[in-house]
Length: 363
Image 1 (cartoon, rainbow, N blue to C red):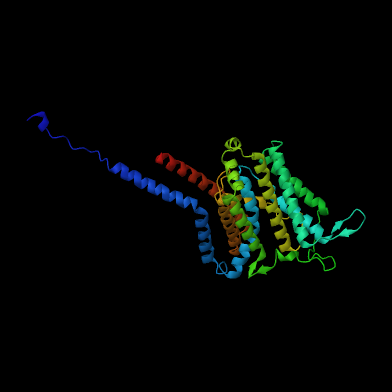
Image 2: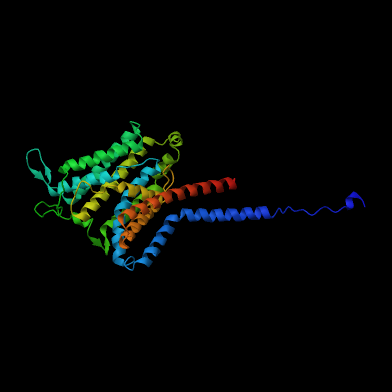
């Protein structure tokens, strides 16, 4: 028998199995990435199902309206913070800005503005609200200037402003409270309760304000050159400079936006309570940052959406109210909230690793 007639040994190599296995692995990875991207919605649905099963009162229309009203304040705060985080910054002062704006507004409504000649000027509610927002914009601009002009790290600048704004809020009333913000016909300053107490079409005005703020924020981040520049600065500030983007202006602008949103949230809370006190919105900055992170905003900047942030605020709000409704201790509420935030960070990192793996595999 010639060498050419000798049968080759059977091969154990199966070339088709590799590509098939690789294809299945890629499909699973893409499915996992899709799930991670939609994790906020998944968690929100699971929370609603869980608490709806445990408590019959959870999914009643009245309770859902109350929970959504609670969410509105944190969502507005979180929307402002999201602009900052998208640029790679952080704003720890939003809770204190809300408290300071609350006290400024409360003082104007309760005591009026003392004039140099000795008289007292009472402003209309609309004028008072504008002043409150301007206070937030001013504090935000100070944060931005400290960060851009004096090169103070965002964490330190806003941490310092947290104490400065809270201290200023306490100084306005010597630590006291402005108890009655109803106004009077004689002073022409009635109606502050509208934004925090009243309803329109059966839905609290605060919720409508949240929807309006979110809609404007979505349009700004997705449809305007400013929004694209915000993402560019967060993605790579050096490349943004080379592209002709004025990074300092963008940075100051996002802190002004954050301050304005904080002031608005503080006024909504004050209107709901009917009184202004210096500790308004204490620690609310943590909820705002947590909502942004839960919604998929990367703390490194350049990635995130306003819709995701609002959903993150709903997760935190519905979780907190659900725990209260089923009688969970306040201590355990803090534990659960902290665990959810840490889990959100872990899932964010997992999403980025999986995204990088799929990108490398496609290349």
